[in-house]
Image (cartoon, rainbow, N blue to C red; front, side, top):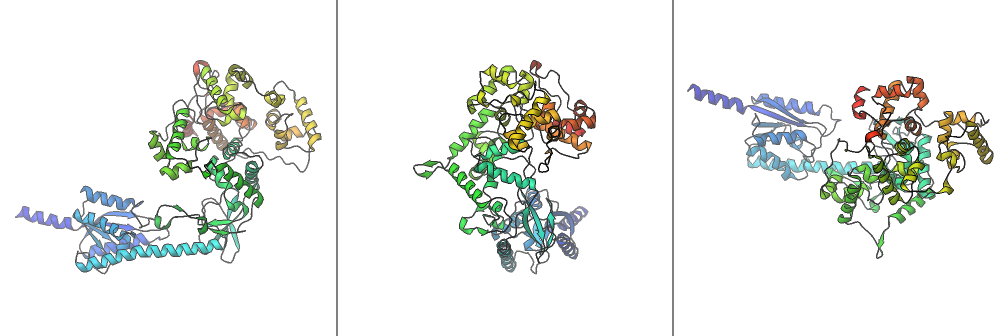
Length: 616
């Protein structure tokens, strides 16, 4: 009897163990979870239950089960038989979910019921006891919960459409060259929002205003390069990365980023809304142009309309691949074949490699066709190893550890592919080491060209540039600047780089420390010219070391020439002044200089940037 009585008591105690599931769909519903939990505990206390588990989905929509990890875990625990409760308490039917298909909501409840775990709704007026009345009421409640989401979606869409008609910005990111300006309901300016900041009052509105002049100048340069110079998106992206200019997201530029800018009407002041839509958390779809909402003159334009239209004409002309009078569309086999060839050529695949390689479709094309790069990689049998550095490649994606023959063979392949060789071609390619490596190993690029049999065009040779100023005195360089000043009437970095006979701006900075120090001896003090160094200014010692570590990670090695050619770090003079020498700065970030970097095929660096970061 005692055993039987103990068993009965044990079953009674177990039957009173419950778990509660709570959910709120928005982070703004600050007290929703607490209110639900309070009602659930009151319901449990009135029925002698003890809540032993809490499953909470905070800030999660109830439209589907995706992203609701707590509900997934609850279902998994019930199905696995590991649940130490036999009742699930939910505030009401809508907290269980606002599924657009009422049968989906019933399905998850049936899974629990089949495993012997009941679901009870604490704030509903019916008992979920399986009776016909409760089944009817519950079905109506589920349909009402789904209909509420549909009605709310329609109201939100109408409200956003009205704001878009008034010319306000509804996007999270303003885009490169613009900033978000916060105004109140009366149109009074409240200030510029910084990245990551959001409006705190519902009646406030956001519009776009031009950003810093240097960003506006970059936007205009991009369109001018695309229209006047007929450069491709990839060429423009590589040039921006070479200059050390980052995108609005803080990342390097790629072909897709330039494409998005060239085809965005906001740069001529137009607001275009509803190009894509995603209602009720369904798959995003692209709407027809007839469904777009375009507002002319919503923002201050950064470029002329004629230039934008010219860019569109050039883009569509390049995009057209006519076959029998129709536009050609890549087949799946052609897309996958391009990936296979790229994989065979480089030995790996990545988003950046695809975006910055010619004759390969854009990353977005693979996303639309295969649902993402991962799906395309699986089709060709490539398994990416995320977070693992590729063997034989530096952190910058270039081949490393090559011997003499390997370096020359890689350069011959690049020559065959491009039909020419220049410093720019070599530095823009990830299939060969950078020019600094070749110069350090063979003495000069001219020597490398001789070894592979390449003869550069002598008509384009600029002696002062090709030798980097070596063997030319400072007086000769200054005489060249005086002659250029008399010819052009002014001096600037652009004028120096565009001139085909004199030294480039990099040579002048290397010799004199800056353009300003070189202009002063020749008496050039025009008020029109202002020297604005693109290098970081006013950094602390730790920030300088971190910038140097990032450069090491990007280029795979460090040297005096690397620092001079990069605009991402202060000049080498600043490092010497701050730390006494470059060697001391290298030691502080963990970089060890190998005085014989190519002996026995060794690299010109020791250690690892990722390992050295922990010491910063």
